[in-house]
Image (cartoon, rainbow, N blue to C red; front, side, top):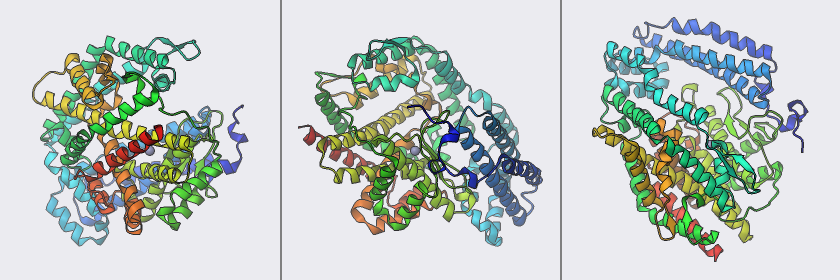
Length: 599
Ligand SMILES: [Zn+2]
């Protein structure tokens, strides 16, 4: 079937971006307004310490600029994504990005200047000036940094080091995305095809074992050829993390990374400990996978291919909307009505593929727009899950924007995947309860098991790897290719090594291909996110109304408090093992069900 051109797509299938700007002229007007406002913001430079009123005015001005700026940037970016070949919107989007950079530079004086005001003064102002109280949490959060701010000279040097510090990530990106070539393999039809990073996962999911094996071997043999270069690059990245942590007087690189979102290190340790305690479930999963695939021994390249055949169920968009709403019914009428309108008459969703449209799916928008969703909807189960996932993000944004002032409406990365994963959990639960078809059940369980394996177990293994790597450098040890291989291979043996499993030697070099390792101590949040979402969905399903109320309050809370506090109020204490254990219990129960169904 030939793809429609953008102008051929009927309005009811497109998101309603016209409610933001009906024309490029209208957009240009706001663009110009942001440019005019920037000098009004910079006029506050050097004045924040004058009085509570001045500080309040500056913060309000910052929010006003930022609110309009976001709307300008977001609209241009979404217009560009509708048809990436459209040069008009490419140009608008590029201008949006440079305006954003300009505004960021203009606002850069704010934090250092606030930090230069004595904490007692700010706290006294918070009590005197009623308008400032709305910024209490934000200002307290900024004040936390005080202990880690150095003298002006040191700060200037650190700022100048910025690009050098970012070099390892840059170098790895160039090597990985531009220079590395992985050669060719023979696909399912015996055709010679080039192996690329983009295609790797698809090959690894192939039902034909030899295709998986070739892809795995070609990929890691290539990385192995460059292992010394990549080890030196990664080691530099770790050293830079350690350098900055020491320069800012944090006890460790991990403490420095977690300080940003005020997440206690116990959350991290707790995740590692609880997942490790539950490795027997992962081993049981590996053994079940081996049996279901009918293999004598399972290799690392057998971990991604589906354990059950695809269910060919055609699910048109309208049906997906109805099913998702039924699955989310436990959240109550208000939630479902807003979601229904969003997916239909309010036109949050850009539903189908068209020529030039950006691939994939996302939830996007700004404080002043609808919480839009880009889809490439395909009439199948996977697409329905994607819809439920993105809807979770959009509802989180919707409620936070409605109930929070602009400066608290965004949520942090730590909680970002909770609402989306929560929706997927409710959808799985609903579908499992409403079908007798064993094949569909197995398909759904496979889907859930895989997301636990790749998000909870695998990301925790990554988190463990980077923790060890940073500790080694902090202890003055060298991170050579041999050392990194050894750390990574040992982890794989611990996580996957069980009867019938071959932990292939080549997996030792996988550390060399993970871009996220260059944003240290980031990936653990995927694992805590899925755990929190699973625990919350379990509470909603078993406890009912009180749990629903707590969850809806969480969706409305944006970043008005620290993430771990917001989750605690919702019913999950991420500093305790419980939510992680609850999620792993769900994994174990799904495994039981799968074992029964597989016979
Ligand atoms: Zn997401």
